[in-house]
Length: 86
Image (cartoon, rainbow, N blue to C red):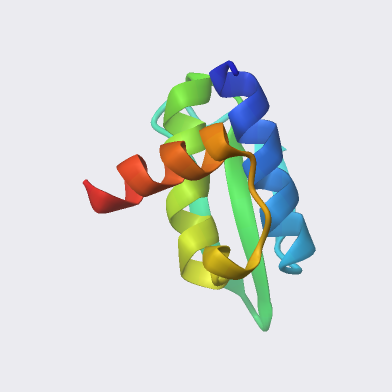
């Protein structure tokens, strides 16, 4: 499974946790999770490599939901576990 598919799977996890997604060019440094008023928003940096975005989304997904209760493809779960541990 390539990193683009991992990223898309993780973005679906965020959306299902009621996190709004915004795709914006942000210079390539990566996006992240923020709270705007009472809503969680995750900014995906369209200038950043997919790997950096996937790592940021993995951390955010682990913060906003209990990933043990959600089905993730084995490759996605492995990616999250490796990313969040470091």
